[in-house]
Structure formats: C-alpha cells, structure tokens
Amino acid sequence: MSSFSVRPSEREPVSTRFVRAISRGRLGGGAGERRFEAPEIYGRSAIARIARALPLVERAYANVRFSILRPKLLSVMDLLLPDEGPILDIGCGFGLFAAYFGQTQPGRRIVGVDPDARRIEMARKVCAKIGLEGHTFVAGDARDVALEGTFAGAYVLDVMHHIPAADQRPLLERLRDLLAPRGVLVVKDITTEPALGLEFTRLLDRVMVGWDEPLAYRHHREWGEMLTSLGFHVRMVRVPDVLPYPHVVIAATKAD
Image (cartoon, rainbow, N blue to C red):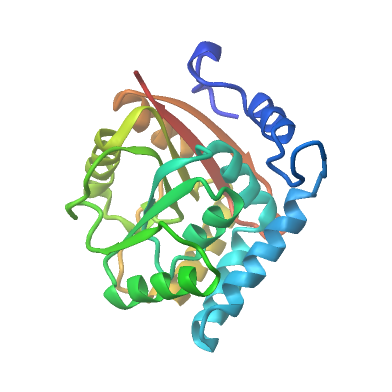
C-alpha cells in the first residue's frame, strides 16, 4: 500500500459505503426484502451481456480486456466510483467499461471519450443493445475535446501508459479541473515492479498496439506524487492477479 492516504474526514471509507449500499438494497431486493447477491457473479453476468452485444471481432477483443480486468478488479473500482451522477470515461473504446459500470449503478451517467469515431459509434450501439440509457459518447482527444459541465467522477483504465509522458500530467490536470469538489478520479494502470510483470505487460501491449506507439509506464509512487502535487488526496492499492500483471488501482479525491 502506498504511503499516500486520504484523511478519514476527507472520504467515507469504502467499507462504510458498501454497508450503506447493501442497507438500501443496492445488491437487489425491493422494499421490505433483503437479497444478497455476490458482486462477482453479477459482474460476470454484466460482462457476458456486453460481449453478446458486440460483433465477433470486437467480442474477441472484449473477452481479452475482461480477462485482464477481471470481475474482482472491476468490483474494487466500482466501489470507488460515485454511485450516481456524471462519470467521465477516458479512452472508452467500444464502451466496455461504460456498459459495465452503467449496469452496476443505474444512477450513473457515463460520458465516454475516445479518439476513434468508429469505436464511439460501437459504444453507442452496445449501450442501446443492452438497454442502457442516458450515457453519451464523444469522439475526440481527451487532452482537448470539448466537454461541458463538471463530473462526479472519472476513470482511466489502462490508458495512462499509452499517453506520451509529456502529456500525462496535463491530462490529469485537466481531469482535476473537470471534477466537482470531492469528485473521485480512479486510475487503473500498470506499475513498473516487479520487472518481470512489467515486461509481460509490455509484450502484450505491443501485440495489441504494434511496435511504433510509445509506451510510458510509471512506478505507482510517481503517479501518487504527481496526483498529490495537483491537489488530490490519494490512496492506492496493488492488486495481485493469477497472471503477472502488476496492477495498481489509484483513487484520487479532489479537494473541496
């Protein structure tokens, strides 16, 4: 666990949020009824619905992405994100995670951003096919695309290391400015240790994006220091996996 931490008064503990969510029936059941469903099982069901909404080639890609970001890892991020309000999805691609987090919390309004217009159109179709409403998708570069209003939260999942190193801080600075006070930015990325895990990830990244795109990985302490210098209160956790991905999940809360 990183030395960066949020003061208790700054952020309600995840455990408290989880218990509160259960008490109001978040995991199922109506008034007067309490049904407790296993989040992982629900996560797998949500993933299956998304995959079925995609054409065969994109479905294969989705299965790869969801094999990397497994339900257990997605559940961690689901608890960190706000339960409702506008949520910004940076590098949304085909809308896989917008569709996932939109299913787990219907009060969220996901705004997905991706530079590929074809993927944006696919994201719209995926949400329509699985019956999700109120989500929007914008084609453009997250560094300068026009976005209106403020956001309760934002997430960047395995995207930061695809951003050129010189542009990483400006992008995080822009996301900070787009968040409402106490808004939460969730960053899932790859840290640089152990070295074997990093090289395993780098090889798979090269298979996915080719050999010409620059990759700019950072150690999780660097991300923590950068986000703290931008005025965020930062918590982070390393998440072990059966595969040697060096996952790190970072929750950065904007100050009041």
